[in-house]
Length: 235
Ligand code: GTP
Image (cartoon, protein in one colour):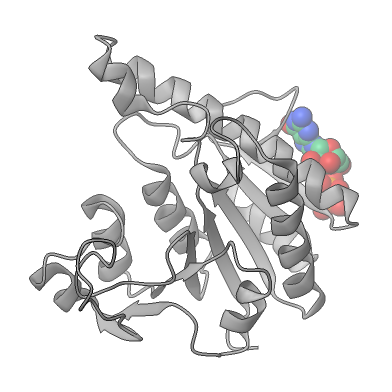
């Protein structure tokens, strides 16, 4: 395996699958099976999942709600997805622990870095819920922060597109996909991988990002086997 410890960032929107809201159980169990496959290869897996299928803080602001308030609602949305994912992992026999950045001790362990690392060493999948616990930070930022804290080898950002393109492939038929690109070139070419807070956190801590299509079964394993899947961003 190319990487020993990974931080997998899953998008909340992707969890909707074919639905227009909420959680598609087929998609959820497809993710759980992919995670099981890489766990069985001995890879240590930590996960951060977004909440956009349920609630987005930015939308709240558009509706006149205070941004901070909306962001906290978004953090709770990530907890719902995290709990769903934990149940899905359990149903395929993968041991997991859920840690929350906001204390809700009846349903999740509090985030304790050393404990999370211990869980990973014991082969448990660790899901980090409630983002960073702070408003104005995205779940991509939470993924970057947690990845650095647990010394992950890489962030795998699962999306619906299969990597980073020279321009938007839906608008430009000449767009081509990068196999690999530097952080500086992503920035210099005005491409978008994550929001800037998340992006610079990775760059400054020399943490590579792989953007790949998580919705194609088997892709997660392929990335970890070193196959050319998605786009690698690194210094
Ligand atoms: P080890 O002690 O390393 O074996 O880890 P462990 O997670 O199995 O031990 P522990 O006894 O701490 O946890 C047993 C179960 O309780 C696990 O499913 C934990 O996720 C859960 N758990 C532990 N602490 C909390 C907590 O503060 N709140 C909630 N809701 N669950 C917790």
